[in-house]
Image (cartoon, rainbow, N blue to C red; front, side, top):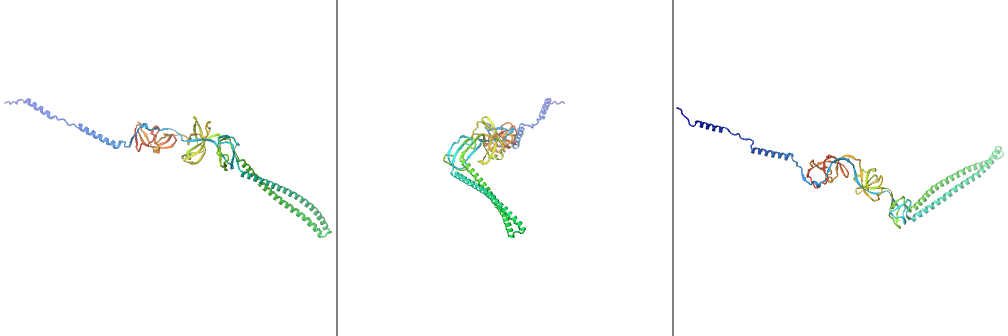
Length: 435
């Protein structure tokens, strides 16, 4: 018997279809939006922390306005070591008029400010004591002249008397010799007694001895007279020198111009009393000019005669060199004299002008313009701009020599870099400046 199962096909098909749908299970996604967001957030947080702790710029910063700063470029060039000093025009030679002798002024012939010629009388003085001393010296010289003449005359007379005495003695000696010679012959022949022989012998010998004594005496007197004459001549020469000196001293009562030039001052008036050595004025030699220059004592060890400099006058440059140094320091400065190679034609006494005084030979160097930054940093560091020019950072540097325009850079900067050279007074201790 055949049993039919109704709708077996459709049931079977329906079961089978239902069974297939239940077997296909969808896989679970790993990269969910939530997970991706969480990982991304964690990564950003870790990156931020790494940047903050290891990569971020922790230096102190300050915003500044760039247009209020002075920014200078570091360059490579010739470093010319010089200082700028101020000089005052003075005559190349100034002759001080000092009173050689004292006295009171009886006449003032020329006032200050006028040209004078060499030998021209400027003042006349009066000094009675000098005149009296001159007269006394003249009197003494006259007395010595008389004494010398008398001594010479005495010597001549002594010589004459000696010749006279010797002539008389020689006559007597000749007579005594003849008598002695005769008696000697008679004595040998035993014609005369011993007494007569001895008498003529003694007379002859006495006269000969007397002649020798007379010669010695006269020799002594002549030597003594010559010594007196020599002494008198020396004393007279000295006295005559004194007379000439007093005469010159009296001539100095007329004060004369020692050179031709400008009598720039005359500090006396008629009736005033002048002491010996007192300054009464000065004369300027206008044949040349020099500059009297004040220099800071900081450079005293580097200044020496022969250093050169330049000065601009009426659009032209003139060369000078140091000819004299005054080592005395007053108020932190000492002075030097500088002479022109060729002085300007229209320059006048008392004018002042800046002078560029050369301290050394030019040399190649890295140069940084001078600025107000130095007063805060002492030249130990500066703010250097970065490449994009939006900020400036502190940097240690080493500076060398300095002139009014540039510092010599020894280390820390390269040509082409830009540096803030204006004052750092308002920047505090900030290490970075942002514009």
